[in-house]
Length: 90
Image 1 (cartoon, one colour):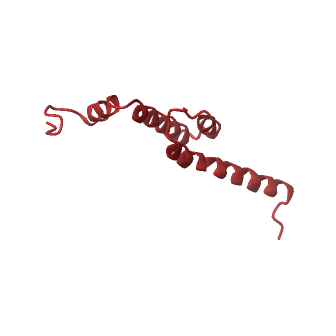
Image 2: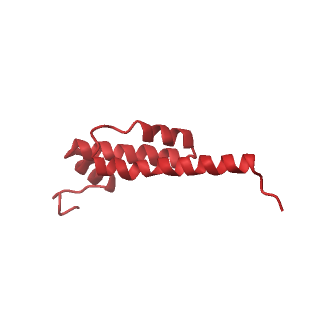
Image 3: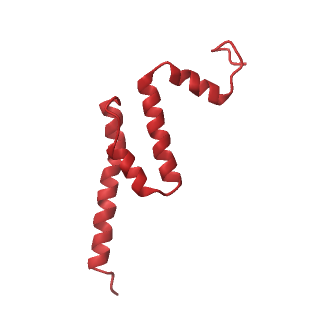
């Protein structure tokens, strides 16, 4: 029993109830779930595709936090290029 909702709810029911209140919250939640899926399944291409296709409905501050990962992609790409052209020698 959840006193806040005055009825018995599972954890998933609580999440669904809260997401029902606001479309932007639902969009943000879905976006994070897609990114989480791609990350956990090591689908880096899919992960960065999701980042490139963020919904315009999402707040700017939210998108800014997620787009930080594009910097990680850039850094990783540069790092791998350096390793390819200048292999470590001892």
